[in-house]
Length: 117
Length: 166
Image 1: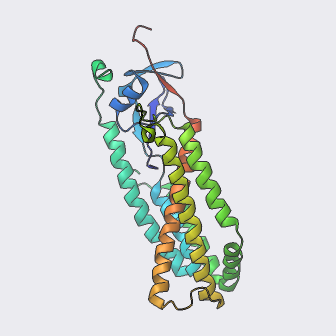
Image 2: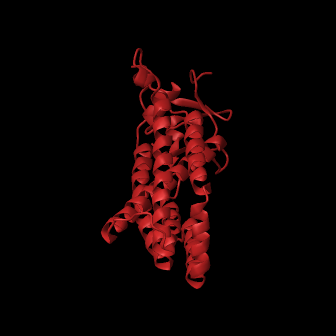
């Protein structure tokens, strides 16, 4: 449940990213959720093709930090061991999240008719 | 992370842990007293429950994830909210219970208090590993929920355009 991607479009005329509140695993599902493959975002019109995904959290850092602090209860060695184990577990989570990012970024845009089936 | 480039957040975490390592090794007895004080206070439990409640409720409310409605199906109608209740309970109980077990183990190992009489070394090691993993799971998932909420309130809402000519 907590693996959640950040969806964004690149603002026209700049390199700034506009992050969306919407959550969807593919472009087709995003279009179905919003009822159209064309989106109005902050006063501008974008195609759902222009929406991309990125990871929301650096799980390796988070895992290393939490693991290190829990390990601190066992002393200096615990910090090193906890940090290492936390980093490994976090890295696995990062791989899962990266796979979801790629799934979204490689997903196709639905034909208009498919939205209403 | 791009190849050959240092990841800033990982570097920052490494520095924090290295500093903690030096402090804990150099001031072993003081560090033990501080950990004991933290574990004996109820604050870690309150903090775990607060972040579990806040993170999950806030993400559920702010998330645009559709509630999968279906006529006459109570589970489908309340799915999003049912999920939230079970998630809060999972994170809250796993966090607070594992913390209580770790507190008992810590006080028994370093302060000669007896919490687990009749348990062998293998049993105690097993409790330590399982409790540590549960606490890790609870804390990382709770933090992730709160981070997701923070970027969601910063996000902009997208609306489907009615037609391209509008």
